[in-house]
Length: 306
Image 1 (spheres, one colour):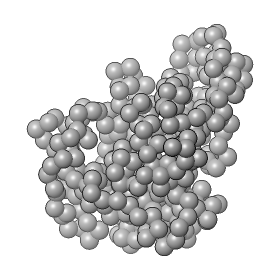
Image 2 (image 1 turned 90 degrees about the vertical axis):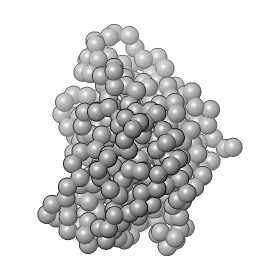
Image 3 (image 1 turned 60 degrees about the vertical axis):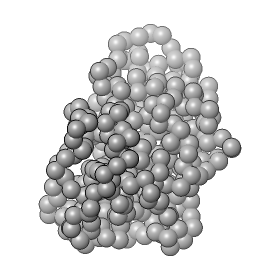
Image 4 (image 1 turned 180 degrees about the horizontal axis):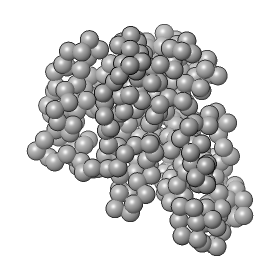
């Protein structure tokens, strides 16, 4: 998410990504790493990753939360080369994991878990899967789950494209959320953005017909890219196509104020922006964006029927 740090180049072909960090099982023992197709096919090398791992060390309450509850609240996926990869033969079974059949909401880049835990608390009839690569964030999410005594949330430490490409069954999700992904606002880093043309088909794959893809960002250039990606994706319809255009557009406001772009008096005549998703709590990160004067953009795309 936008809290992620500055990028470093993806690992070279000659070395596994995150070399030296052996995947571990819940009891702390090293999981055997299976060399082969996933990394070799370019999960980490052929294209730049959209994240850079920060420190994974846990301390204090986070360590205790992980030690006490990760065995039941963290999905223990088989790894493939790196400790955030998912073996392509593994499939997540939501009904078996949650002990029931319910609509599944997947949040990509769940950060510290504020949004997903709050949503789970207020929607007990739905199940939630929080996808994140940052171990302390996952541990803090587990803390929140335990504190709220929730049974309808699980976390998984995994590279999002792999979760969408192979881990989740096709058509298994009711909604996919991508809130405030790292904007990679420098032009030379734009290629690292998660939401791009190659990402939309992965989201479409896991969404059931009529499912929703919800996005939010506080960077105007990324917002335009998100809107363009959704518009170009044949599997999606913009739920708010043409809405909030001209003077009512948040993009017009961003251009007028120049908060994250050059001042531009040209109005946004395309629109398509959703109203703020009321199921998204005001997180500490979003609150910082508001205090900085940045404009918040919401988008909602509907998965078409096959």
